[in-house]
Image (cartoon, rainbow, N blue to C red; front, side, top):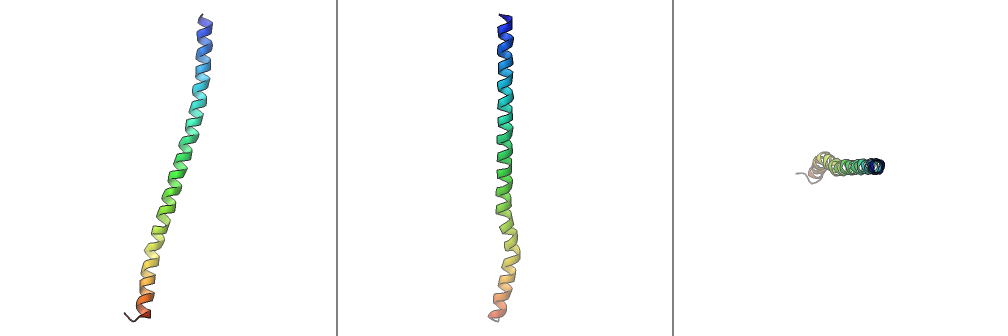
Length: 65
């Protein structure tokens, strides 16, 4: 009886290890998804900080404002 319990505990420990590995992969996937989303949102905003003043300057000089 005791050996059966030890065997079940060993099997459960193996399953828990597999679950842990899977959860870590999922966590890394979500982390990189979040990082890429932030980068793809922030880079265009930073680009606009430089592009809009240059555009307004060009349009202002073209129309003599």
